[in-house]
Structures are given as structure tokens and as C-alpha cells.
Length: 133
Image (cartoon, rainbow, N blue to C red; front, side, top):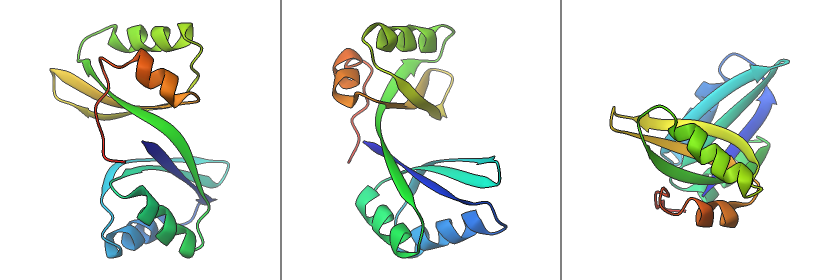
């Protein structure tokens, strides 16, 4: 799976424009995270149809970058994130970003962006959630 990042000048209505473009193109957003740093908006998206999202956003003039992401399911209890991050560190896999997709009191679903996706998938195979991408 790949995470899409949009980096743009921060302005009123930016997220409204991006969500309109995706909605009009029938691209559903699975996860969204927005940060504003030094007057730049960094919008991180997980979507069902990454190629279509990338195509329509680039056609609208947005700069897109992508990052390799694995989706994992952990028990919702203290120490689980530490366990996973230590396993990846011991295997030499660098974590670029972690986003919580859901949490229900029993399980936590995380999207973990990494530099070595195949190695991370192998290392974390028992926790991987299969996704469409």
C-alpha cells in the first residue's frame, strides 16, 4: 500500500478543494491527516483508488508524493507499539510515519510508512492487514 502526501501552500479552503476533487471523482478517503508547518500544508491520505486519486489531484495542479505503507493490527494494550517499533528497528527498517486508522478497545489498526516495505511485511507478517492496492 502507498500513502499519498500533498504538499501545498496553506490557505483557506485547501482541504475543501481536495476533498471536492476526490469526491467528484468517486475516490473514497480511508484515512486523512493534516499538518501545517511553516505555512505549508502536508496532507496525508490513504484512499481506495490511489492511482485515480493521484491522477485527478495532479491534474488539478497538486504536487503528490507517495510513501510505502504497511497496515497492521495490534492488540489495544500498552506496549504493543513499542514491541512493533523495536522489531522494525532491529531489522533495520526506518519508520517515516505512523497513523492510527482505528481503535475499538480490543484492536488498534495502524498505517506504518517505512523505507523497506518488503522487509517490514515479512517482519510483521503476523500483524499485517491485507489491503486493496
